[in-house]
Length: 362
Image 1 (spheres, rainbow, N blue to C red):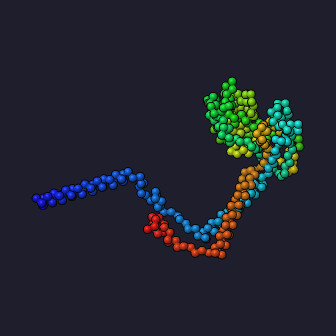
Image 2: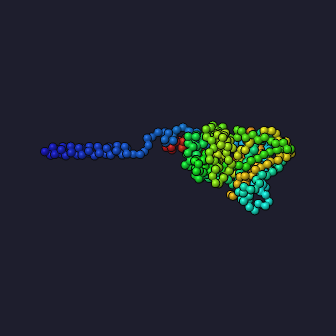
Image 3: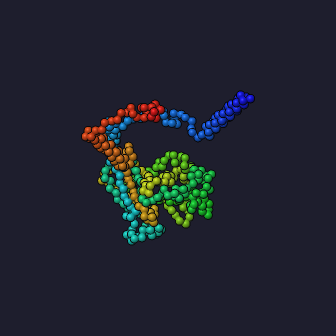
């Protein structure tokens, strides 16, 4: 009986031990199932083979030198191309105001009785080869204002079927006669100053074709959409549009509708497709219609040639030269520092990725 009792007791203990082992394995497997630890892979643990350069003095000095040698010539070429661009800039918003309105410019521009015609004379400093691009420049005009940018209907501009889609155009969406096409504040404020050019009493023809992007004409402005009820309200914002010409051919409007990101911007007005000789006097007759006086804006007329780099822009060349010069300066500084006060390099074999293929120290 004792043996049986002991055996029974032993069996019971063994049975109890087996129960504990089973419950432990169950809890372990449950913990694994509930674990949020991601599945191991060399990719997720960033243990893939990779280039891990050691920044030795020789490598750093060589890199800075190469950058300097490449950047400085690029900057000099860019600056030279910019210097070959001939540009004439004339601010006329103040000069075109009659003396008796010099203290009340707003009354001058808002009155329908005042003469808005103004004659300016420009001197050609150097030979300007055709085509000579004509721009108007506005300062302190925030076309990037959120409400202004949103005040348009792209669907209406693209298709006649969406003529009445003017939800985003308030307050220039509807008049009593129906929807305004094109609607919105951007179109309503269309620039309406005009320029006429002559040299020695000979009129210069201004070509206003192909001044807008082809993508805008083909995809953003419909050939079946015609101006309707435009500038017919009580408050006139800017230029009027010819109601017999579709929007896809109204390039002044298309250029204006591509809003600028900064408060000072230029927009293409046209091209003079003949050479302007050095020291010639260009007579410009301006119709000074656009109101910039109410918000302290400025208006400028710009005549410019172009080069392979575009218009006149010294910034790109100066930036390249500055960065290249800084890199050469740093390279020379590191050379002097390495020669005057050298420091021995540590043994790369002690780096973690050299001690263990997995990228972790043993």
